[in-house]
Image (cartoon, rainbow, N blue to C red; front, side, top):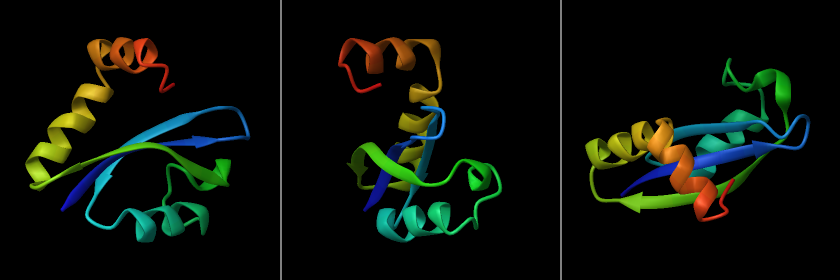
Length: 80
C-alpha cells in the first residue's frame, strides 16, 4: 500500500504534500530533519492521508492536491 499525505506545521501553518510507502517512517524523517524541504519548520503533524494500492495512484493524487483544482477540493472539504 502507498499513501498520499498532507503535513502541517505549527510554525507558520505551512502544508506539505507528498506520497510514501511507509507513512510513520516518513513522518519521523520529516521531524528528525532528514528531509531538506521540511527541515526548517519542524515539528510536522499528519493533517490528512489517503491510501492507494499502487505508487502511481498515490503520485497522481499528490499532483492533484498540488493543483488549483486540488486546492479547491481540500478547501471545500475543510481539510486545509
